[in-house]
Image 1: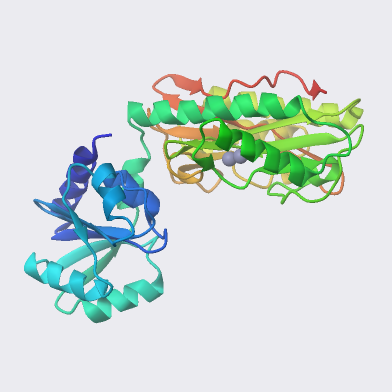
Image 2: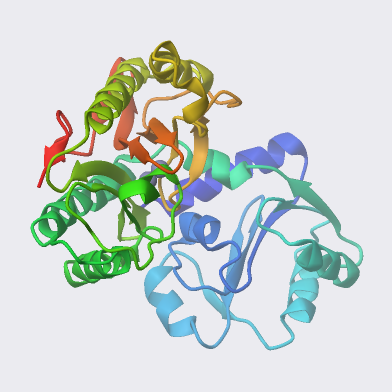
Length: 363
Ligand code: ZN
Ligand code: ZN
């Protein structure tokens, strides 16, 4: 990864906006993704000062040895326990007067602390500077996401071969998570969602003690994280014979998923892509049963910019990685969501999810 090039882009922004520096403070993982993006560091505490010409990276004694390996292109400075004093001195020594800080990942508590301590420095909250750089992926990032998607697909194949009546949702989620970790994932990209039967109608369900029964729909919304990058995939299958209603809803969501994939290409807005899929569901009279947006960006975090939704302000660009995941949820009855991970290309999209979806898979 070319961390210097990323920091150089941040510097262009500093010059444009008339700031002397940009500050990333990662406290207990509060800003891990942005710090990792700019330096390669994976620890949960540390920080970065980017100035017009230079950059200063620091972490505490728990992480200095790891940082020396992960951050080869910057000296690693060791933070003392009174790190706020250290920061105040460092900013003063660098003669920084106007310093930007990302608003989304800085708590009000931290912001107030920094303001109190950093006298003589104007701290300017800015929005989406690093997140904005993260929207379009480098080829190397796309490779890592594709690797995470492949592992996610493989894990799904493995777990589907093990499903038996009587297994609980929690067992299935846990076994799949173990499989991912044993087979090369850093961890899972998010808490895996496994829902049986009527529980499939809750889009962000928490797997529970429900036991798998004959005739149940099974919704799996799953993702492995590989080398820091996430995958996100949803498939719905059925144990035994599906009801005619389940079949019909599956066909409808599949048609919406295809319409969404058809629409995704550089230059299309997040609203337009969402509309293409949503129109299919609305025409079938189920518009009010599709409550969430069509998709989201995926990268170091499983939910990041851009958004594909009726309220999105984003326009798709080549190299973005997004999900296409329409769903229809009938409360108390059933839900179907079909989610693919794709790379936006100039004239279409490249689908990274390879697990079959052409028909409702019967186990
Ligand atoms: Zn998902
Ligand atoms: Zn998703």
